[in-house]
Image (cartoon, rainbow, N blue to C red; front, side):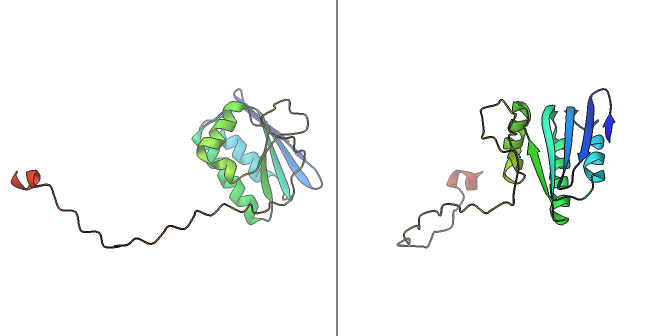
Length: 155
């Protein structure tokens, strides 16, 4: 199962416990419909792995589609996992903060040394965040209101 165009194509492989989707090309406003169609048409499984190793461009439209797919899968009790993003795509994921919401993993066959090899993904666990140190109480909590500068009043 798959969709193909000159600039982008996607292939879907359905397994017993997950769906593997491989995208190749550029994901932008002109091609995001094909990606969205493939993600929405995928049967319900615990994990949908989206291989981004062949994607060389991810636009804002693509980021929105990934975020929507993540929300849709979570509502169905599943999980979206992004696998082996190209360095340019990985940067887009970091800049947009999507990497904090959707797991991004490296496959066992990945030759990129930026991250650990993680062939499979289990349930996500919460990571405790460090707490900021408590501030000492202010001796005088009153702050007088700011008045306009005298030069502005004279004008």
